[in-house]
Length: 485
Image (cartoon, rainbow, N blue to C red; front, side, top):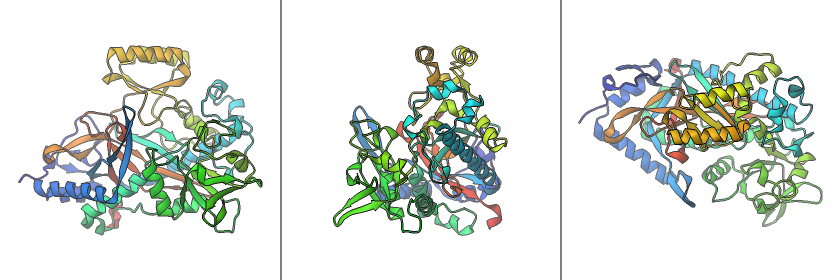
């Protein structure tokens, strides 16, 4: 039976994460490529089946919404990992820490003195039209002056090998459970490759998350009561909520499980009475966390929660209002934000961006819709965007009208030649598929970055859309230390 022949593999015009040229694996990928080349078609198929069985036995699912229905699906996983050398990752780690530090300083400034606006670095109209700026948060101080405690920044690599930050997710970033489970599945399928000591571990994330959350407790010195607040079983990320609660050994609660007392402290209902809650890792959107302050019809939040948080009696992660920096228009200003607060040049570059709220940029975007990717300022999951080169004239004309009607809500970027990675496709053939990467950054008393992150892969040939909600899958991500063998 035929084996993987790397001489036949090519990713023309794109940077490939594993293969430099046909038959030439990158140094950090040599061991993996040799291992895969020694497997025949039957053995490859057995590896793929073993991964699928493991995913079913472990109950790894995600939820998609289609035609008004919710469907739980097995997590789509490719057994061929994406590999990054440790030396490169150390630079990426430093760049992510720099970025998140500046973004937290920016958020804190916006809810206090707004110096960056007064100094004209970020235009006042950008803030005035931000749908995620929460006036209810003005004047509130957070532990360690951190607002976005958990951040997931999406990284992409262009054809020249440059790693760019595509966007920052600072509201309720998801996907870290799949990063951890991808590693568990890969260890089951290819255990021998982990014996070399080259592949850096990822399994300390939940311990780091617990320690970060504990550092926010308003009652230092005590064993903090930490809970994860979930919208419930019908939320698309419920698997992750329950997974993280289980791994950290904390309670998974819904809004009805919590109550704010007359002392403006938060309590959890238990069989033996009420127990005070110190830290809430909330996976509920701002507008639904407290019907007294935000959406009065919300059944997902807790009456009085904002009052308790404002008085410092409970910590919320991420803090309400952090989403003001989770805006694709604000994204374009992040290099200036880093320079303003830290006096440093960005270690990780942004993708060049055009803001439709500015007349010159808007004209360029409207004249070049067939070449650009256009994104709404506050959508996520790949929804609501236009990939110009793949869109019809009718779709481009529709977006032109949307941009003209609400220019602040749209920005555009060049269509990047996203890097590829070998992916096991039909008939056990290795084919290049486009990938991105979402590492996770934890910020509390200190800042910590996952060793790698969630690699998402566009399973459809030629597609640039990697989101699982739109047909994408994922891979394990290996940070490889060549000095580790």
